[in-house]
Image: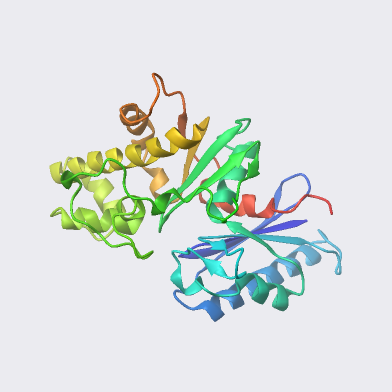
Length: 308
């Protein structure tokens, strides 16, 4: 039995997969905002509740071993063993893997949440059978992951796929104000394409909204300002992804996260990225994650083999 955990900025989800890759248990709780000790406690509690459920329903024996994999919005530093590059900033610098392994008394494998999503979708999801897949989480941040032959590529610096902290390609004054990023740089792709970045830039452009969904609804209802902003957002996404295609040349790009539910992206963005990709044709597909916001948690479970 494999357990997968998705540690997100707003929710923590756990799933139990049997060796037939069937989900036999799933639960979500809110993420304790900005509180690292409570976040660790919430994860430990979820694991214990899951084990109790599996034993109660005779899915595992009382002392039977389960594996635990977890996706996080960042990475484990190969230098320090602590979390780095997390948009949930309370995790940065924390010994998350060591703390969990100590409290759970077993090994825990941790990888970037976008890597987990990408592996899940490349294995049996929207990009099944593709050799090279780039996965994107458009949500609180703009995570990116790479899967080659269904295996996550982490990289020697544990930053493979981190497209979101490069500057917006082909930037011009028409793109609006310079916006600082939490990473210390300015005008990172994340400040344009993440949920918070999208909302901030809409308000800076003179729009009125309290959520990204409001912007989308306004555009769909004929609000000219919101519609023009959505067109600009599509150009930003096209330029950001074109720079990835120029380097990686993936078969498929999979979108996950809350903003992946904007249906118009899948038709409009591939039309727009044609102008920026260094090729006479672009056959890379842009698709929505088949397993939605549960794709990452499935991929986290697959950080371990089915049978040890």
